[in-house]
Image (cartoon, rainbow, N blue to C red; front, side, top):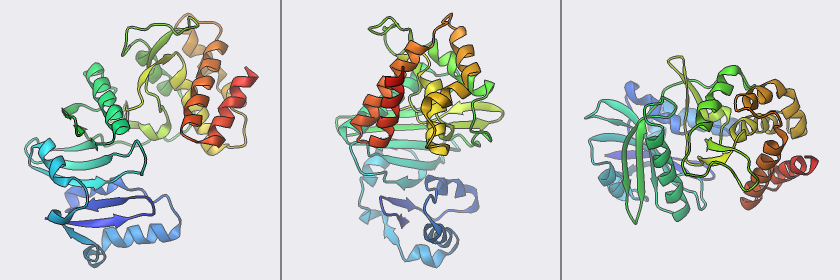
Length: 302
């Protein structure tokens, strides 16, 4: 089989020849760049000659293609995203399983940090199996060399509004009543629950009138409110970067109070400070100085 390589400044994508039924596999790439990247992507998708100029035989692919196919073990058609370089780099896959007759999404991780994240996502899928909150886990293979996760592909749309809604709020509540560990409170006695970890509009999908969450690899037990505060702050940082995060929280205070009242908590501020401290440490550890500074400011105000 031949694959067609689409190369960006940071990574590469490999697509097989796709008929009209499988064009969703092009969803691995979104042209976030300027006009040139949009034009290149349109030419690649729509003109076969452009794709042929970057064709690669499967025997000459420069990534562990045979290991991925062996890990899957099925009769599948796959497209591949090599991921951004770094300790968390993994290969993301969109494909179609000809035996199950369903599309799927998969991750293949070999770097230690990436393997740990994928293992964590498998654990969460199993914990939340049957809740409808996560995609359905189809297969997981865990070896010393790699971790392979295969799950159902959810076809949906992002929320039309980037603001917090009651539907988004009520998505946070059932998570907080579940746990990955035996720990129920932190060192300061604050209540803890399961947190998605990257609870943002781009990880929320509406499918068949049901809200679903994707990309669970950062999930962990954290202090209550972590996901709600993440959603508010990440939206503010993206769309109102000059705005103080505390003002963004104040703008959504009715949802914050409703969330904490659901758990019998009248003072949300210790939870907001714990969130700010955790995000400050996390972003600083990743070298995201602009983000860490914003969360540092929030923590110091509180």
